[in-house]
Length: 141
Image (cartoon, rainbow, N blue to C red; front, side, top):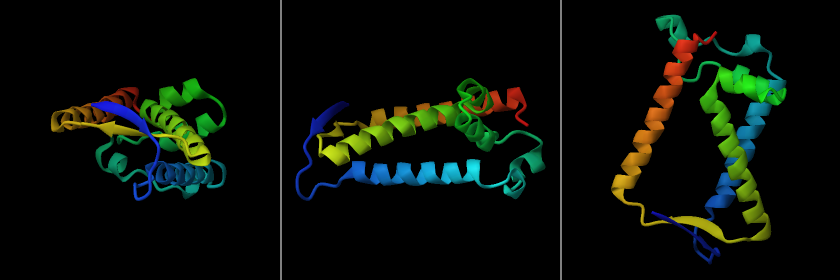
């Protein structure tokens, strides 16, 4: 697996433009939930009601609210995976914005083997499960 930076040529898909639009939409929805919606409007967690355990996304809204308040450490303790995902989203949106606005070279993965794809999928699943175990252990409220 290798990352190459290439100028976008005619006919090639512009993934960065799509990434930028996705990041803007996700950040706008997160800001709406954090700043506008009262907590009482948010649905109760059906998984927690049925099982009594935290779900993999337990604490997401509280973590977003803590991040919006600038309390990064508290947000990390509340929901580590969301905090990391938002940091990656912020870095990705900065990369996409600079690349799209200045028509810079695009990063492209080359020669990703099926084995490497499986390894990445297993790592992603392991991260989600480790985060979920943390949430259950921390007894997310």
